[in-house]
Amino acid sequence: MTKTNYIQVVNIQVYPYEYSTYFHQDFPTLDKFTNCKHFLLDPDQNRIAVAVDLLNVEWMNPDFVPNSVNMAVELRLDDEVVASKDFAVCFSPGVEEMHPRVYLDLTDYELSTECEYEIWVRALRNRNPICTKTIRFFKSGPIKDFMSIRSGYFYTSGQKLRCLERAETDYGDCFALDLANDQRCWNEIPELEGWLYDNKGNRQRLEAFYDDYDVKAKTFRAIFPVKLNPDLHSGHVYIEFSILGHVFGGLVVQTSMANEEGVFAPDEFVTIPGYTFEKGLAVLDKRGERTSKGSIARKQLENMVGLSNVKRKLSDCDHLMRFFLMRKRQGLPVQPFPLHALFLGSPGTGKTTVAKLMGALLKDAGVLSKGHVVVKERASLINQYYGSGEQRTHDAIEEAQGGILFIDEAYQLYAPNEPKDPGKDVIRSLLTVLADEQNRDIMVILAGYTEPVLKMLEMNPGLSSRFPRSNHYVFDDYTPDELIEIARRYFMSNSYQLTPDAEKALCSLLRSDYEHRQKDFGNARHVMNIIQTGILPSMARRISHATAPDRDALSLIQASDIPAPRFLELPAPSHRPLGFAA
Image (cartoon, rainbow, N blue to C red; front, side, top):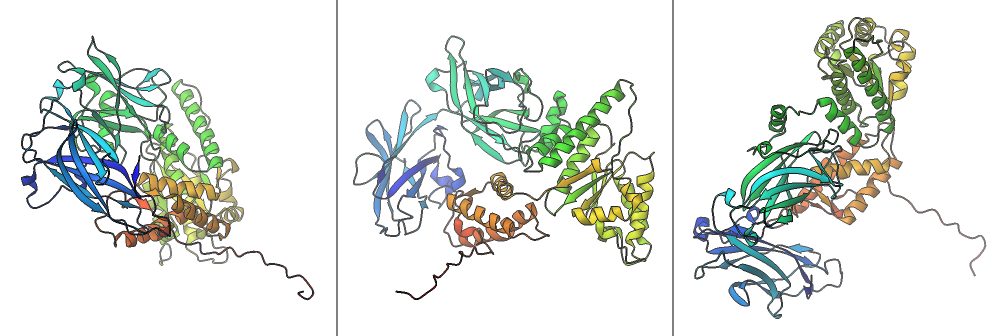
């Protein structure tokens, strides 16, 4: 893109509207603007609102001296100006972006559906535009007059697939929609939009382009490049399709099963108003294609940051359990295997998260009837009254039947120098459950720092024999690169972006904290604490001083939002030469 003086036009967004519906407002709210180029023509439309995204290419130049630039937005038909609006821009030093909005008054002009218009943005002193956008209007009518769905599928390496084997694809994996245009000419096909919904109900716009025209059959294909986030799109996704703002179809697609060749028929495209993850499951149930929680858990475990040792051991356990399940279904004998486990490691290394995934895997393999996880710790199992621990432990065991009883910081239950410590009641009750070979519909996980938990088992042979070494899962501290990746995934899944300088500052902070970590270092919990109590509050304070911040400003994290490292790296001392200076 060309630039005038120090200003660059990055993007133009448009919204046609009828002025009287907005009373005394000069233009619509920012969420009305769109990158679309095609619009339905309302007979009462008399204005076109234009949002211009401007960039100050000199914003980092300390010698930058701003000056006001007079600019214009024009609506053109061929070489004639249909409507125009002038505006002035002057960036302050250090300001990178501006997003002025202007409107073009069409009170004395009637828009046409027979031609294409151009939006120009130019400097008044220049005749040529800095940036242009072509727009077109279509008459209102039934969506079927524009196009109808023939089939849909993922298109990967020449194959047509009904689902994806992995939850993260590159842009070579596209969703294709085969369409028919029965009523109109090829040059009258309006642009198509796709919307990808994640597990939280948030949506992302998908750009579409047309391909594979068959003029005789009046069919063509729309291609949607898709980028799936493993944290937000595990299990299944919902893709919705619209023309000129009107939804004409939607499709629920699985993302965590093995690739299955085939296409989706027209009757499988079901629009889901107010889409939620649960509504997507209901559609899969009706099609008989619901993904098991175990399959989703395997994919979530695979996509977790780090934990290579834990993943390998859990994968071996999963394979063994499913092997025994297949033998059982064939009437073959199945040997009982130890279920109870130790989760050893520092806080924030994913122990509770993995326990929940393990519950889903055990239920999927038929080992546990429910697969839920009940989390307890010393404070929730005992109180100040002597003897209360036994009853509370019994209640916790009953609550966890069919699932997992997860006791965090379990070593706090063992106090060898305190004969009357109520933690002994809890351990005694647990031993009863652990020794009951008939009660195999519950799993007990003791979690905490490695050394204290192992020491507790050494001092109590009854406990130690119930937790074989094969069921010891060691959760290593995250490396600096893994901590940085955890932060990146959080920002991506919550629609934040880091400037290059902000990412550099964040890497420096996390590496410094890792190098100076103490025994109680919180790992992923430490990262979340920095983000939620440091970065986001700092960003909020900065944004509070901005005037009408737009979507980009509310999403972009600057280097100034990142806390400075608490531990300064001091330069190595210089060695002064002996003797006298000359």
